[in-house]
Length: 83
Length: 83
Length: 160
Length: 160
Image (cartoon, rainbow over all chains, first blue to last red; front, side, top):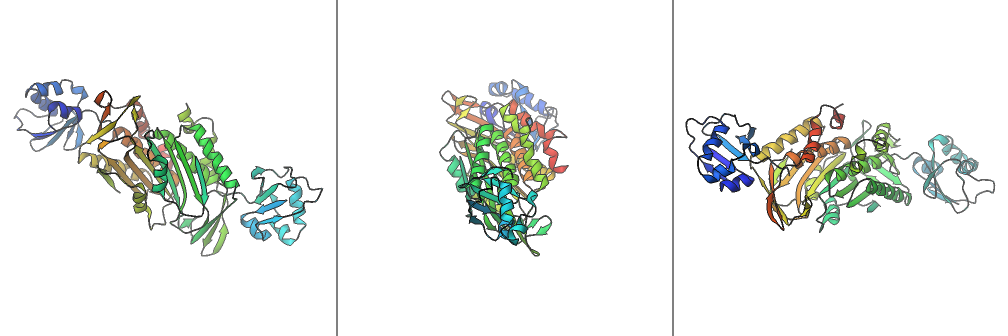
């Protein structure tokens, strides 16, 4: 699964993009974030406050409970600030 | 006194500009128009309907009863139609 | 800041650049450019000729520009209006307003073009297949300009 | 009709000419160009960097452009938004809308720039004397964009 990070989330994670093997039991975005937080202190720090995080699944805005599957492109980022 | 004509008024009068010697008894725009109408059939035709005529005295909009004097620049024209 | 009534065409990119180049305080530039349409009042037109009153036109355009600058916080303004014979597709009028804030730029640009399209001191002679005809003032345009006269409404947002 | 998200600068005169040259059905072209200001939130900024989500940005900009074309009778539209590092005075965004009628051009241009300034998928990193800082979403801008969501109001004038 491809995951993209933008803005300060990208900086805190330390990468703009990564490809992960999704564990079987992760079915939605919230589950993905919980799993990412187990990957180290950087992730834990980056995803401490999920209210500050927005999500897109396959380039469409989605909620934390949106279902995800292998092959999806998941993007995690702070609220957009306009042009 | 300099008189300017624009648009169809200019076409009917047959001139865009003329300089006239104002008779003593002409004191306002309405009087000027009455006097112009005595100058021939072209003028009589052009000024038949004064409701269709707008006036500027020294480049400021004015009414038919606006006072005029030798040295003024009088412009007579149909309503402006915008740009 | 600048009003021009001219026969010549204008270069919109060069005009905007002249107003904004080297400035770092302008956040938004609103522009309206009017073109001659090939249809007027349902009829095909071949060309139109704009006549104006030199001297008075510049004075009136300068007056409305000053009013816009009094009503909105503007950093730069430009009005160019052409006269003479113009063909369909020709540029006829340009309004540019620049401000730190986009709302001021957009509203003042709309204010100026509403005024220009309805009250600018021009007379239009249209050429159609049936000959030439002087255009009469239009009612609907007067309404568009008149709304700016009202004491309340969107026109005063920037001042509130 | 056209959406571009690019690092490169743009030429506003050339872009408008490309939309209008040879056309005789367009009466008005409204344009809004945004520039980087040297002040943001009361603080001097030295530069700012716009980050975006390639692919999703174009999709969202295309969506709002399609909505504008559905709401107003437009003959041509163009949105250009830059990303990357920009200095004060740099051009950042361009919206061009063209219509037979000036009200449609102006209102749709305002609709698009309100959306772009508030909801376009960009993140801003500002550089000040105190370092760099990611900009947070602004409340007042959300109001400007939100008024277009209301069922009645000036946004629907053209459709009435």
